[in-house]
Length: 387
Image (cartoon, rainbow, N blue to C red; front, side, top):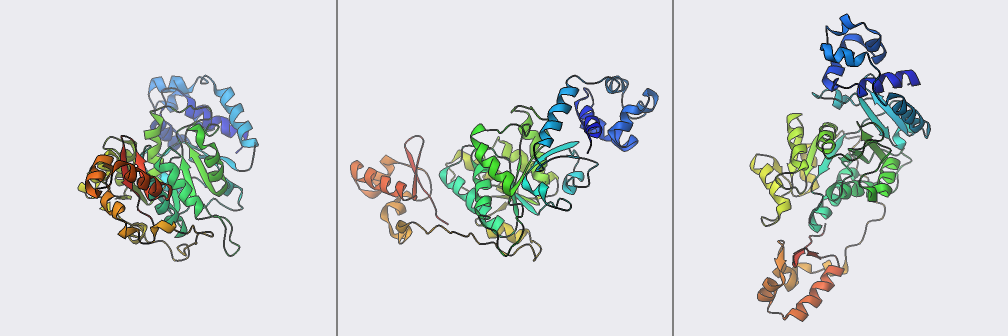
């Protein structure tokens, strides 16, 4: 893409009063943006309103600065692209949705590979920004299993479940086997311009995703983290995946928006059940009541989404972590049996076990250090299931 073509696409995206729907109608009628802006008012009025015609005939504020910033951003490395609706590398899965973005800003080493960009088979993982320890562990383990089975894991780079999903997928590709070129392990769809990382503490994670996956955004460079942009980007996240797994979610949450969008797009939706006492599980339980498939293992999802045999050869984790020594015979540990799998108070544990507070706290601390118990807000404790 040369600078003039880039300027045309950015001008169309920046023109006030011309939304994505009107822009797509103009492209369908006239072709590339250059032809749209070369058309006379009478021709334009056959496609859009009089007010939109007037807006198209004036250069939008900030266009020159946006063109300059984007051109310099692209020049900083071969791992950066701006994909347009007219680009052969634009994901076909998005083209078949009701509201495909005009532009996709993309960053990742996959863009440096020779030949056309190959969009992988993907599964989305979404969930709470404030997950329980068990929820974060579930997201990480499911993502690692999906990536080992040949899938790309899609999420949104947010705190909590998103970050755990990206981390799990990256763990599956610590090394490449058989001399293969690195495949896309994970894909992050973000709600800001790609010259920003949000949340800022995920800068290192974003860098690792760019090395073994892709980061995508429909938002122009310089776009800050605006609350309304995150639910909107979820339609891209769900469309790029054949199925969406909700790990933990409140009833009113962006994760349930993603699940609804996935269902509307004809994708599969899955949910992991949790404690009836945990607010983070209520969204998943609501989905299950609506007919979404309840899953307990990654294989439950993989059974519903068969992958081509050539791509589904598991890629084992090169350096598997040995299970903690305390997990041996953990089922026989009286305190773990007393904990169950729901959050529980210290008083309740004292009553269940007959232990005094000092002894109980000491044992809970030991189990916490061994990764078998998590301390939750409000003085609660929860057992963590190990894979």
